[in-house]
Image (cartoon, rainbow over all chains, first blue to last red):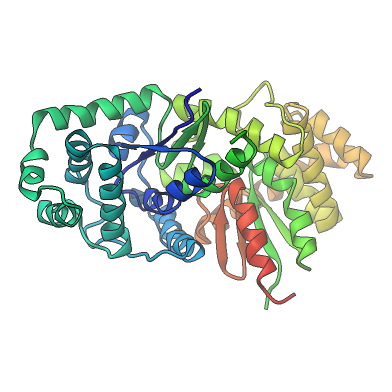
Length: 201
Length: 201
């Protein structure tokens, strides 16, 4: 059986950030690995007709407080990027390029650092120079990454990920799938953890 | 300080049902009481422009599995009423009438029994005869209740509850407020529990 956990996320999603700070530790504790799948939440909601939270003022007001509390409870830093909410196309494209050029482990490390920059420090990570800087610290060629985000194959790969996500029942982020069971939302990472604890290691 | 927990719910909401099976025990464990506030989720989402889950097929497919799992994890029965989703106006009106005529404790017991009928047994509880039967078992005058659901003051009271909920930042259900802190979603009842555990008794 496939024991990997599928982790669908969007770099623009602060709740994805919260989940991203926990998912690897939880998987490792239960002898599992994580497959990271970048998507665009805007692409999912366009397909479903669901309104994005930042555009529902009463819901967004709650989310801002809830996110700060969620970060506090998880013991991780939290800051909203000044340009939020904005469609960030470069981070998922950069991730997919790193994934193709350097493999899964490097891409995962890259994703974690980009999330930490975006929602740990509040930096707008759609800026290719910010992404190149993160890349360089991970011994990823920054010039190649600068070119990579404009690669047509990379752009097509992101579209394909979004279509695949929808085909797999993913309508929001973060979204986790393990053993065919699905959990939606940063607040469900804990339930996933408990589920995994109940499965044979 | 006001130590009561405000619990906003909709009788048509299966996630409200899940939360309704836990909220009183949790409150009691921490020396708190619960104020039950019926609202119409459709009224809230009309104001916010948010699409109701049953009308987003990909999301509803997830919710049905998630609800069954949530009931299993909580050890409570679960069945979707055959007429779901339907606008149920009579249960919240009946609740408000019971509240006015018999007080808070009776209204709470009534709400719990109506929820158990709806999502524990899968019965369409908009039927006034079903509500009258539940009422009778709680020594509530069923004939007075039959008349009560059509009372103009009761109808106005429900509208007022929805407006008040929105004014208090409530955009979905179940929604819990304690000490000015808010939690949205059945999956947050546990966080509320943990919060209360950390407060002076």
